[in-house]
Each structure stands twice: as C-alpha cells, then as structure tokens.
Image (tube, rainbow, N blue to C red; front, side, top):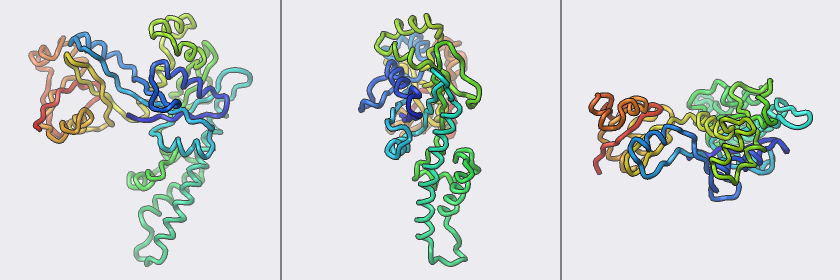
Length: 329
C-alpha cells in the first residue's frame, strides 16, 4: 500500500479534505491516517459474474500532516510516496495559483537544504582521492540535483538519469515525488485557470458533511448539490495514477480482488503481490483481459472461446488483466 501526504497552506481545506476521505476509508493506525479504497467498478461486475463472497479493492493510505510546511511536517512528508497539494479556491479573494507557488517554493527550498548538506558531506568523504579517480557518482548526482533546485526546477522535471535518482532516493526529496494538485472549490464551481493540467476539483466541505452517512445516502445528498461523481473518488484515482501503479484482478467464488503493481511488473512480480510463495514457485499465469472475460461471460467460457492465454515469467502485466497463477511450493 502506498502513502499519499496531504500538504497545503493554512486554511486551504486540507484537513477538511481528509475528513471527506475518511468517509470512504478507515483509520490507518493513527488519527491522521485514512486507508481509502480505489474506486473500481470492474470489481462488482466480476463479483456478480463469479458469485464472489467478498470484494476487496486496491487501497491508498492518505496522511494528513499537521504543521503546513514546517520542518516537522516536511520530515513526515518525506516518508510518503506521493504528495497531494491542496489549494483554496473558495471564499474571499482565493489565490490557488499563488498558494501552489508558495508550497512549491517551500518544498524546493527544503530539498535544496537537504541536498546542500548531503553534497558537502559527500565531498568530504571523497577528499584526498586522486584527480584520476574524479568525483564519485554520488557527488555527480548531488551536484546535478543542486543545480536544478537552485534554478527552481522540481527534481522530477530535471534531466536526471536512473543512477542519479537512485543516489537521491535516500534523501527522499519532496520534489522527486509525484504530485497531485487538488483545488478546493466553491459549491458548483470549476477548476480555476492558472493551475496545472490534471488538477482535480473538489468541494471538500460539502463532501466532508457526508462523512458519517451510509454511502447511498451520501451520494444522494451530493447529487442534490449537483455532484454526480464524488470529487473524493477522483482524488483517490488521480493519486493512484500518479504513483505509476496498475491494477490486475483475481476473481472466483471466494473473492474478487484488485491488486496493485508498478507499471512494467512481470507476471512473477504480480504473483508476489498476492503472496511471496507464488512468486518463488511461479510456473505460469493464465491471463485474460477484463473486457474479454466479461464478453465471454466467465472464466470457463473464456477458455472455451480462446481468449484466455498462458503466459510465462517474462510476461509484463497489463492494466485490467485477470490472472490465475499456477505455482509449485
């Protein structure tokens, strides 16, 4: 499960958004965490088809970090896998683009300070080496990161190769993480101009008011406000996509379940997401795409129609694949 840290300036509505998220989630072990299911209508279709006894969606954990961009808050955000930047687009004189610029500047400066210290330490470690040896790969990576941050470029947008990124990961740079920008809107308003493409708009206060209601009642109330698709669902889905994850599915009488794997994962790695024994003993995977499975009407019918494939260890799992793993203990 991946962690997404919520960050924003005071009064952006960050904690209100978190309250709305807890409507569809559950406590993640601490009061400021919420484990939230990733919306996936495919699960209900497969569960009905195979009469599954339970349905288990993929999940994302949201972390509401208090303190804005204080040193303590930034340290907590470094432990997350992605950031959800909340900006205020409601109330008197909103300036969401300005708030985003303020948060961005704070995170750039925080990364620059960390990289500066790490670079100084790395140079001390290499001091005394011959000129022939030259700078270490770590120093080169830190120098490139320092240059980018000094030019106010986010590290994820800098021209850093994979080796450089590997050296930087120990610092957990905030500007190397994927970001999702959320505009906290007035009721019925759209995402204002000046924000990045892909910004998600949500009226957090309205959705937070439904936090204690059953899901069907909450959706009915939101519909009265003209909210057809809950913004919270779009926030969760956007964060999941930003993490470069794909979903594969398993289905049967016991359960229908969504599993997360990184983009580009092989069949054995996907098997390992289910259980480490499946990866160690992987033999093959029976695979059928979700659309093909639904069109066939079931697993056995998919076999009969030839839409089910047998794939080996080199197969790269695709979004929406339905897998049945064969393995030996």
